Each structure stands twice: as C-alpha cells, then as structure tokens.
Image 1 (tube, one colour):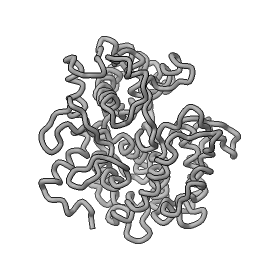
Image 2 (tube, helix red, strand yellow):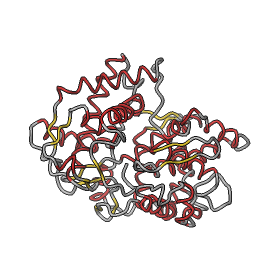
Image 3 (tube, helix red, strand yellow):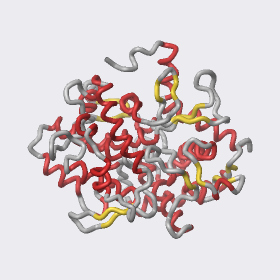
Image 4 (tube, one colour):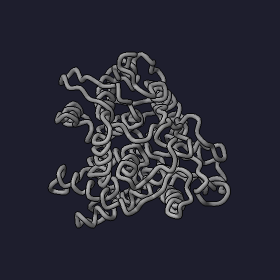
Length: 416
C-alpha cells in the first residue's frame, strides 16, 4: 500500500505542496525579496553584478557547446569523464537485455550514483584501474559509483546490474570504502552519511512496493511505475519529481518531519513566508531534482518524453551558490559567513541556498535571451549544464588555489 495513502487531506495538502517546484520557487523568492529589501542577516544582494555572471555563463556555454545543443545536467555526462565513453560500454554489456530491463538498469545506476554525489573534499581522488585516469570531486564520485555498480555491489545477485533492497541491506562499510578507495590517506568527506543513505535506501524500497515492486524491490522498478502513468508516452517532470520524493523520503537522516512525514531537503528560515503548518519552511530537494535530471535520458531512450522540464528549479548547491558569492552578487554581511564552517541547517546556509535558487531563475532568463533560445530549448537543467555549475567551478579556481567554494559547509554526505 502507498505509505502516504494514510495521510488525511489536512496533511496531504501541505506535504504535496512542499514537494512541488512551486513551493521551492515561492519560498526561495520570499528570501530573495527580503534580501532585496536589505532585511537578511547574512547576505546583501547586489543585482548590478548579475551581468558579469551572465557573461561568464554565456561564454562557457558557447565555448563548450558551440552548436548550443546542451545536454541535461545529469550523471550521464560525468560517466563520460576524461573522454572515455563508459555509457557506450555499459550499453554494449546490456545489448541482449529487453528494452524495459535496460531502462530499469539505467534507473538503478542513475539513482544510486546521484545519491552518492555530495562534496567529496579536496583531499580525495579516485584512480580508475580500467583506464589509469585519476579523478576528483564529482567526476571521481561518478566514475567510482559506476564501477561499483558494474561490479554488482548494490545487488543481492553477484555481478548483476541492479540496485535492489537485498543488495543494499547487505552493504558493509569496507565494501563501500573499497569502492571509493577511501582511506586515512585518501579521506572521503561524509563517508558515513553516504553509507547510511544506501543502507536506509533498502528499507525505503520495501516500504513503497507500488513504486519499487513487491517482489525483490529495486530502484529500477520506478521506471515501470512512471511508464504506466504516461499519457501518449508523455509524463510531466513534476510527476517524476513527486514519485522520487515520495520514494526516497525516508532515507534522509535527522530531517524536519511534518505529520510524521520526513520532509527531506527542507529547512527553516525566518524570511520564508507562508502560514501554518508550512510557515518558514524552505524546500530545496536538490539531490532529488538531480535524480530527476538524471532520469530524463533513460526515459527518453525508452521512448518516453518528459514535458515541463523548466518547471523544475535550479539547484541550491555550492557551485551555483559560489558563483554568486565570487562574482559579488551575494555579499556577506559579516565575517563569520566566510570564516566559519556552517551546518547545512544553519541560517547562513539556508539563506545562501535560497538566494541561489531564486537568482538562478534570473540568470536562466538572461542567458536564454543572450543565446536567443526559449525555455523549451534551454530549460533550467541545461542552463545548469551549460552553464552555471561550470562557471561556479571556474571562478572558484581563479580565486582560490584549491578551487573550493567560498563558503564552507559541514559535509555529512546527505546534502548536495
């Protein structure tokens, strides 16, 4: 039975709203409005610096994608890091499988890989034995998680291309550490949090048989759930997000709950508006939206079309947020913002993330205008990939030797 079906209308309405892109935009714009009025505690907003951000993003987009055929901001691009098409190799390995099973495998891989993609830290790297290439940060996490998946680490069946409840339940710390090559000499930030997400994921799969299957629950069964709910082989992006948020809801540790429901990537800020029971709550759902962005390609390859992509939002994470700080759009109002390390739940971080999401909408509009493209041609997930994420990385490397974001956030392995 749908675990959310027991919620009454009084609870169901607020929960559904907090899981919607409309809620993300509404609450983040509340925080931006407070910033423009000078009412925020930690950041001043300088919109006159926005043209510099747009110019950088446009320049990088044109240089990287001269034909302006920008891919989605997804895990599949990072699986091809270092100029090695690991996706093609995976496709060849799956060639004898039925098309629907290939889609399930891609779902299994994409979801587990995205959930492992939180800040790795500056001292960690991954040496790929198959190519001899060494990767850091997101690229390293992507390649490592792909190789772990190909080795059958997330499956109960040895060597199988699956991520299922039994396999996730059986994970041990030494296996995951070995997959990431994590050690005292090669420390991976947030390792315990990543392991906890994976182990909690097994229980979440069993708790939602309508999403993940009743027999041998697996992440890939979400493909069947979504494909059965298309109309003319078309499904709205917001519906994909709703399913992901419902299915993954229980895995997030120590989060705010409402009516007994784990809200996930939702935090409090005094400038966020609204009334009871959601007053002051700011949803981001960054990792979950990144999951959705990474499911678009598998859905399209299965012959489905995801519509309304631009309803989804920008991601409130350190590269996008760092871009606005480093370019002077967001100016810290006191020294602690840059000098201290902040918890993800801190007002500083929530404020920074909310401003980032709201400002990304403005950047997207200006970038589209400069490139003479519309929202259908360049939805937010392509603006990010074109785009703002790489612009944030570029300016960080210009300003700091290690290329770290300007604001330090405690990494627990569960927040993008």
